[in-house]
Image: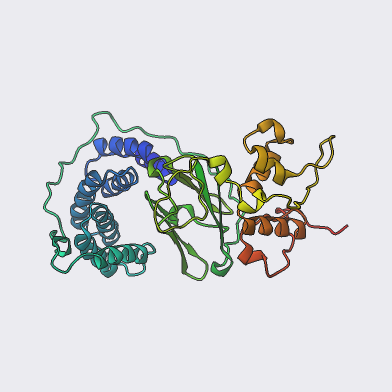
Length: 380
């Protein structure tokens, strides 16, 4: 059970390889635990080992039916469907998703995967073999014998009762916002929502897509999907974390150095031959253009950061200030013209308490101050 808990924690932290090790250890002690097989099937999927994932999900279905657990059957069938989708068996995946809908039509990830399968089937001819269902609702697999560790069970001392955390008021569905930024190697996606329950948040990271879903107030569901992404990522090196104020998804670029011009795209983008130039917004490269100068604590006086970004983006000695200042200056330099306008407007109008790159959200209104909890904004 301890290894199973560690496996669940590793999955939540976006560490599927570590989760595989823990679930495998847990199954060596209890080879008929349905949840362990479902957990390992999930970890296999996130490391692109879809055949192994399907094998574990098949076993989980048979064991769950023996237990008569509707919830476990549903979870196991869902994992089978995802594995078959990635193995290009779209008709089989659609067949299992219909079974999942019969068991729980309110499953939060179901609509996303139904849409993905339907999109694949649209491009397949009517007489194609991939349109034929080749599997059974209950797979024909051999159930392992009950195993138990030879060592006596370890009696653990009860853990001290933790202090109850301060309750966080969940963000309403219509107030949830998304934002993203990037570096040479990483794309970071933020879902700005307070009070997301860690055990009920679902994040699926694939090579060309990311899907997020979690319950919100009033028994509703919030779903977000970026499919396809602007460029491929490495799912095994990507991860996510749920904090009291947001879900942060860190996506590792398959090709480092490729600048994403938006989060979603129509297909993969080729790496640029001169990334330093391509990563600078075009309007900063115009000759004789008057660019704004920003405040600085430098003894040498006001510095034109737009000029710094254009002339020498990678010259660390040119960028003064601490690491935080350096980060925000790079973020501004790598932003599109629209994102830069949003950053300047939101930062100045909010008194330095809000920094947004979404012009559609801040362009048509005054950005109100939003100080951290326990502090208040004052006008001077």
